Length: 177
Image (cartoon, rainbow, N blue to C red; front, side, top):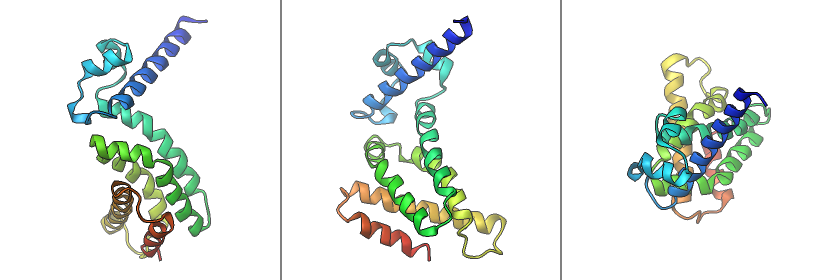
């Protein structure tokens, strides 16, 4: 094995250990309370290893969630049927409900929202009710819709998912007629 291949494997392992350790620490700590030294100790890596790979704890989470969200939203974007897109969006929140609950408890839902907003744009871009809206008007509408949908799902998770999935999906559908 070439030295560069070995270095890449070590880098991948280091990033994985850091991510796993961070997710474990977030089960009992808010992200704002965590220290890099605590994370690297739990991950079994050096501070230098952390800083060779990341600039912040938030970056660890972005690199972990970004491809997961992208994968789902790329599949949603390729669907032609609008009703199927809504169903897939519902399944997205259901699939990640434990991750969102952890984000709520550890105070990093804003990070999830930023990733979500990036990907939901392609979903709402084609649903804009006013095709002549361009530029700022279109962006305001997309941001308004994405924030509303995200907040409905976060409230559902915060409230212990008391309403049925069908009730929440019906509420989301009201905004997409």
